[in-house]
Length: 402
Image (cartoon, helix red, strand yellow):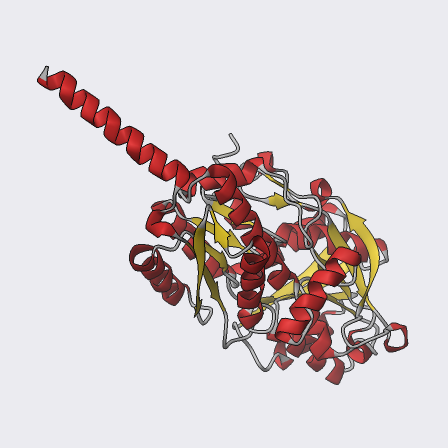
């Protein structure tokens, strides 16, 4: 009788716990952490705009989920994985963070995704680019949202090569993101029968790129590709102009450039640059409406990263509601079941390795006379279907796919 009573008590306790989990939330709220760069080279592409984007997603969802409040945390990781890891652990252990978003900077993204996998907390990378996030270093609760180095290389490089850019020199930011983008671009260059004349790596971040640009200029390569981002890309293009590289007949290719970068560079210098993006504010009525609301809040149009933070945060909240819990593994599974559809991503799916697959866009920077306004900088060259733009999950090496 004692054993029966004990078993009945355990069963009742499990039932109560299961019901509470199914109908409620840990800590009686959902905690969204926006871990971003607020003071460094990526502050314009993410930073305060990413926090604003998460706030917009929460507001658009109604401010509550499962009848409970949604809290937003934010912090500056300073593009340092050790600082990011310390903040992520404190958020999870002491403040009950349920999801951590943005994670601009690949070294940061990899570090925090590893912590999320260890602790069963959802992490959604919007700013980090390295494809390693959905390869062997994938986790059951890790997601990669709007773009990655594979898609950047496989959309931009073939288009440039097809136009006669059959010899390349790549200038690379010397950390995880740059290495990943350089490797993906080199693979495409070889695959398409073009020649990689040489590569050089610069410190991250770097204000003076003159020596690296002079090496690229001296190489005689038809194309100089920049495997960097943010302020590094801005500096690269501006300093290349000072050396007369384009005037000398070499083509510049920004393998990753954001709306804010082109805005800083200006159309006079940036015109003709090919850029791959997963979001542009002036694509359709939905993107324009979202961007105008963002502009009213922030004072500028959203970058691909900031728009991605909105989309991913919104999708996470929808999954929590559908799952009836904020348990990381349960919510992650639900996120992968649900289509991604919002003002930013119109028709996305999530693969087993956490890669969100959707259309990518090859853009060309407009000439000054083609622009109708301050943020009207791109014209669409080609829409690339997600299945073509992103790595086949079966080839990723992620154990979750198997």
